[in-house]
Length: 327
Image (cartoon, rainbow, N blue to C red; front, top):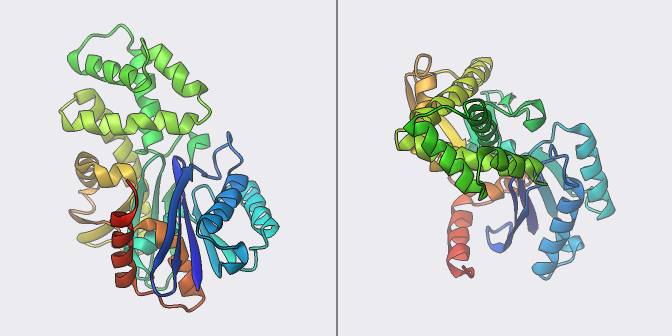
């Protein structure tokens, strides 16, 4: 049995084919395919990517038994409907389901157990499941609503606005941030950097690049970057707490799953987010995915079809696949 799993984010999309026995057949990446991006035809890109994955693996789409597309922006009903039509065009609608990328990431961290997850990369979203299996969501509104507080896009946009509004201001930390922003876009001024990011086809992704810069500068003690990070994480923390309380999951000692390039790669981000949550959640243990999130959507599809995948075997074969793959 062949399972095709997609992890579609705003900045990049990953796809993997694996078997019921946990053997990895093929892994590939392509551009971001969030359904909330207005600058691309994400459903068409996803359809082509699915076809390409099967072809590269030496298979026809009829050989694929299950497809699950875990993609950001599934609340965009028009784009979601167009994605279903695209799957139907490839004659996959009877074997395919569509979930959010956050739900797929949750599967990679918690499986079907109750828990809490926060994903922070280009966007930011919280996902929780209670003891009865009911799911809850926090944030995840996307760039059209101004960006999710604490996300890479939100931090990038906030940094740009702050620098433009304080164009003539002096200060070492402000100067360092100004220089790093210009370096990021190869610009000679902040205004040029803002124009480059704002006029780019992938404007959201380009702006979100500054999220990593803000995290790095905050770790270096830059007070301007730290203030931006604190404001963003406080906004995200407020929404996460509401979600956790709705799900009835609040504990004095909380284990919180994490996914996304910013929250996974930046210890500073995790610490400042923990600080924002500390009054209500005094002790937090961060839990990274036990299995690569690219498999999350496929694992959901397998579970819904009552197919058991040995997660330990999948982890081992994935590690072997990465070692043997060309760099």
